[in-house]
Length: 297
Figure 1 (cartoon, helix red, strand yellow):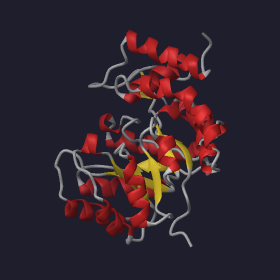
Figure 2: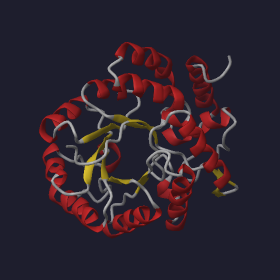
Figure 3: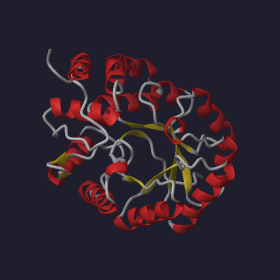
């Protein structure tokens, strides 16, 4: 018996659309519908790609509530609830649970560099405060700390710890985590370029930036991988590789917003200190979208 309901497939780390400096609610609702119609299996708002660092607490809650309301239970919503302040992380997680999120994504505390025991106690405190599944977000390049497999195993003994979004880009980790924590520990890739290989080693899905722009292709790739059709998945990967690279030439959320603008779906507006992509990067993204079949040449 599995500890938690499985979370599998392609899950966009949703951008937060802005218009005139404010959250563009109508566009956000339209993006939710488009993602679900395109085959995305869960939605992940207010993470890094959702510009959570530049959202006020009220805005963070607003985006979470809009996405949950618009999803209408059609797919799970895994709401971002991370902070390097444990009290704040608990508050965000409680709000997400009250709003109706099916799970929360909690990043390892960044900047203040906690020990493994500090990370354990941080996640335990969030675990003890809510009653929905928690996905650990392990992203050493941004948080500076790397949660060990041993710490994950300790956390998995708690009632609500369900899995990990693994953005280490270390493909050995998925095998090590599967070996120590077992096949039911939910392992979600947090790296678009290596997601296919991650799946082959035992992953369950991908929380994807590129899925903002190419939701159907990303969903089809994950569906192929989940049923063991790696030849089919590789054909889709060949179409997506230039886009995986192009979107991250500059901060990925800016690249994703540029791609969405080219599709006519959002304004490209981002909040400082981030900037829209340069014209040169924009052209690389356009070319990659043509290669993927998302735009005409």
